Amino acid sequence: MLCACPAMPWPPRVLIVEDERIIAMSTSVNLRRMGCEGVDMVPSGAEAIAKAQEKNPDVVLMDIMLEGGMDGIEAAEQIRLSSPETTIIFCTAYTDQGTRSRANAAGPKAFLGKPVDYATLKSILDAL
Image (tube, one colour):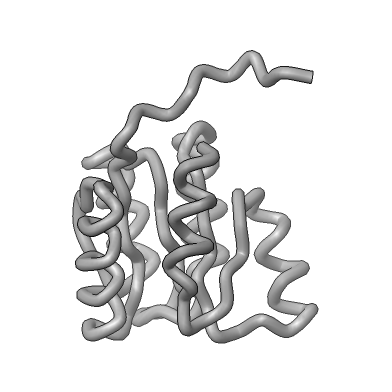
């Protein structure tokens, strides 16, 4: 069955939510190599929500453990409430079943472990 949803514009506009600056920068470089447009990098859930409202990205790459009192799952839920069309992809070292179950409630497109396999990420982005 074909989806009636419109295709995502290419290149997708991506917000990186990652508290480890080196990982955020590496991800940004790899996204640019893939042809994606990075809209920003932020280290906390609160900043992710604000930046998502301001920049309206197509995709949010979301870590789970973030700076501040809000984790990535809570931030993703808030982003999805205000922008249900935004694609959420979790990229995290926390891949245990309990975390995955909590994360799945936020309706992500994918759940990737760290270190991120950028070939897999590219395949996911190409399929959007």
